[in-house]
Image (tube, rainbow, N blue to C red; front, side, top):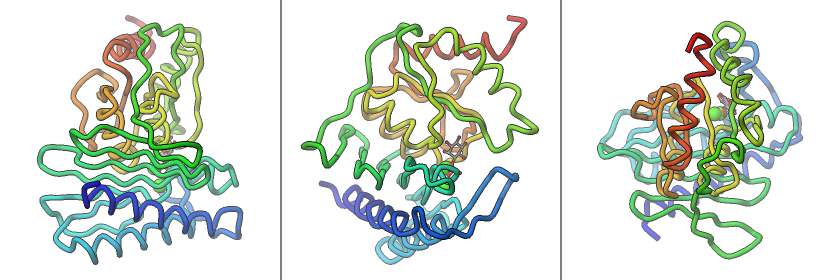
Amino acid sequence: MPLLLSFAIEIAAEAGAVLMEHFEGDLEIATKSSPVDLVTTADKAAEALIVARIRARYPEHGILAEEGGNHAEGRMRWIVDPLDGTTNFAHAIPHFCVSIALWDEEGGRVGVVHDPVRGETFFARRGGGAFLESPRGPHRRLALRTGDDLGEALVATGFSYRRATDGAAGLREFTGLVPQLRGIRRAGSAALDLAYVAAGRLDGYWERHLSPWDTAAGAVLVQEAGGIVRRIDGGAWLPSEPSVVAANPRLLPRLVDALAAAGDPGR
Ligand code: IPD
Ligand code: CA
Ligand code: CA
């Protein structure tokens, strides 16, 4: 396995072990951008470990990490969410992950999403396909579900931390899509939502007001599993884009159209 990918998998697993040490324990919980945007001792401890490991091994690389562990720009940049699913974590709900991506001038080079509760690691590198390592079986190559019928699609979404002041579009989309889909899930981890799209567990995913660390690794997984990642309006996606929609190439345009129609009641 290429070094950068195996390194990313290794540090994601180490950070996952740190999260499990804190899970269901006494947590210090603080708020950030809004009263519902939480950070805990576990987010900070896992990020400190990841940043220290990257800086020791690749001091020339840049780091963009959610809890502020940023490090100078480099040609290669790690994009890190040490704990995606903090609200679940703070409520002792066992659905969260570590998300680590490596970006270069050509785009996503490596993506790793590690779920320490289930022991599942989703990983991909550019041009090399996406895979799942799980305690339940041998490595499995990931591929999206292939259907293009919204009525048979199970799709995930989320409601942003800005929903109290800026959530109207997301809610219109939600109410517009509920009757059209087989089902909607709001499980509380954007990175796992994208990994589940890559793994064919979900048919699609959309959300607004995201940050690069929520989506970068999951987007590499989806793309390497044969899927498409776009902005909600169908435009080209980059980690800096706050909205995302992901699905297979035939379902994606239908999802984008349905979201546009739901978001604009006059259409
Ligand atoms: C959040 C989760 C959640 C999504 C939020 C994200 P965090 O990340 O991914 O599912 O709805 O928009 O900010 O705060 O748990 O790292
Ligand atoms: Ca996140
Ligand atoms: Ca986080």
